[in-house]
Length: 187
Picture 1 (cartoon, rainbow, N blue to C red):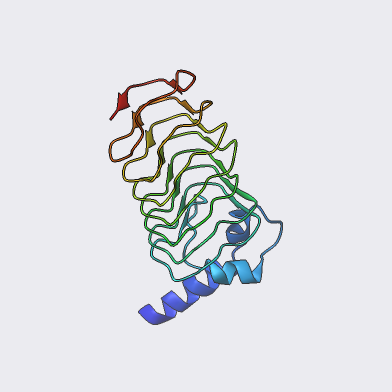
Picture 2: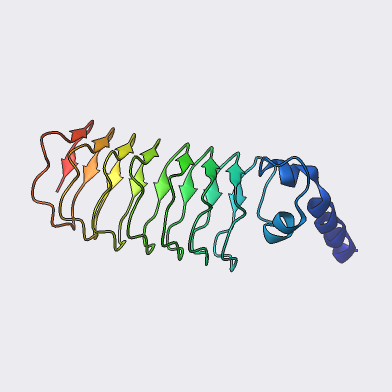
């Protein structure tokens, strides 16, 4: 009986139009539904934490948060909007497009080596334990910026951080006068 209920629920979820709506698409996209089956909840959150999938549909409009922590995903869709936060920590992510994220971005422990120019993060940005060596121009972080254990040696002159700036574990010696930090600088 329990197996029959699970099979029924699986079929119901696969055929549900709400799955397609989570991706802001007009009709059910069979491939997208199968690819992310079981990873979308009723609030528009997408959780593929520790999943073995390697890519997400493009374009992708997530109405809640996107959690790809520990997954095999190496790159995000070129057209990606996330209303909530983006957690990609310890995933195989190597590249981040210019993405619209409504909350924090956690890239801790990824293989990300660069960020796009003009990236705006509405929450915190964590680059802890990444191989990144430089920050892009016109980077705007509305929350805290965490740079511990990165190869970054200098800050771009037009960096904006609304919260605290954490520099411990970096070789950054000075903060340019033109850098704007709303909170404290921790070295």
